[in-house]
Length: 585
Image (tube, rainbow, N blue to C red):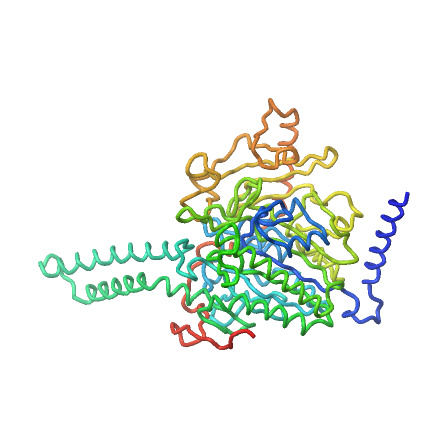
């Protein structure tokens, strides 16, 4: 009886806090709404964190968030790669709805100087919160596009999507930023340029030989131009790495480039300095701050204080440094007196990369018991991510929720917490998490979740609430290489279509509630409900597809090619070099 009274008392206390957030017509918004701090890791595996079962990686600050907050154990990203996942996170919509996907293998935005990006007609939660009087900031990685028609139009810039303030990388940290062995595009670019050079060299020699031997009657101008172009391609191939570093690996403050290329050992102190400055400037609130870490994406830039300190090599060093950064941010909240008035959310954009291996060393994350990883459209390891909420005095400490939730749920949750309205002119796939977080709802509002790889639907899950069962149906899976492996080794990521995927007929069926590792395929012989589940999921897929509208695919070839006239440059192009700010204090 005492336990029941205590539970009701705490629930009533939470309700009174929430009711106090509803302002009267004359109240000041800054005194009414919670501050919102969103912490997004890059490429972090769910198995890399102590509170999700890792007992060899030291993550005390993230673990402390879970200890005094709410931990989600079935938190799902809308895509298994950065650009589409982050688009879905900001808009609350599957990325296929906004066109932030590809159909030709370009899984993310490849260049800062490309024209693709988050369309201007998409509504982010930052845009809505800004209209409600919030100060809105993004510090860290963007990776959702920059320009459309010129190097300064900034049509896809964070400041055009609801953020008042931006400091960070317009694209993403990549192995090519540090001339790493693990290359996202440098090696491919060099190979393509070398091939074109060889073709032009052969054409030049053929024309020259024909001219000398009087076999063809042409002027020397085509030969000269062909030779010059061949020399240009050879030179470009030689300097491809340096070109990428200057083109993509730089820092911006709002619309101004501050470092091009970026100096790696300055980045972590600069990010922390920016976060602390934002909190100090906006401590009277309300504010929305998205800290989009450059950790733990390759090349795993780590400061000297953390190098060699973990039990998991450079990757572990980088994870532990990110956890330290989380602790520094929490301390800054305490210093400014913001802890109790701030809702904090921590997550990763998708699962860890299994293919990031070189010379017997692993440079990608661990996804725990879950199969697959980054880039795999349907397997759990690529899409099941950590999800932690903390709001002292409102959310119950130590609560663990095993219901299906999505990164897309952050959109309606923060919009409604800030007194905004979820848009009614478009489909919003996210669901308000607050009733689930408070414990006033037993089940997630997600009965079905779809899992895309580019624009192709690879899998779907069904939460059969009356049975307490979570079914997972795979329509398409990648072919792992080598045979019997758990990833596509030898590639950067697994493909979504073509010869290297398998279309299953009938689809693969798993019961995640009993088999979260997706190790045992269910068949009509082993599962009496097989045909019922398949029929119900197929019906849900059909209903979902009826809600999709044709949109331009932002990541397809035309929107994802480097265009010199779109390249941001802090000097006369191609002299893109500057250092406009002093070292952090």
